[in-house]
Image (cartoon, rainbow, N blue to C red):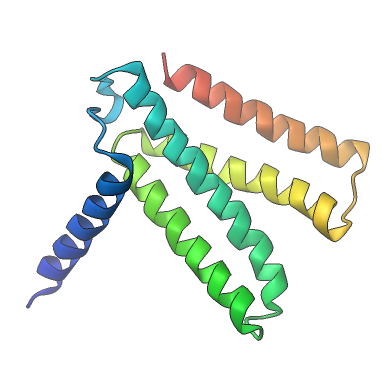
Length: 146
């Protein structure tokens, strides 16, 4: 068995799982073939991937350096889920846009979770910077779906 065969098998397995759960969208990269509902589903998957990114980023804090087993398991599962969903969304969206939005959702969500859950600073400057990141995410989404 060569490595390429194993990779292709893994790729098809992940595709099959995601398509089974979400259904295959009729979209090709930027071409936007298919309905608005299908197109929005891809963005929904990307948003969900971003939420899992928040989960693993915050989860890292609770693992205490991977010394606590259950937080570590949850964090690793969130990492894998986030990357698998991102990978699936990248089949249908431009990589630069999708990756920037995924990391932006993670950055904004993790910063907010840090404020709410961990008592991190909520200074005006910090909130303004979080707002700028959120504005960038919204802007990228707006210009990408046109």
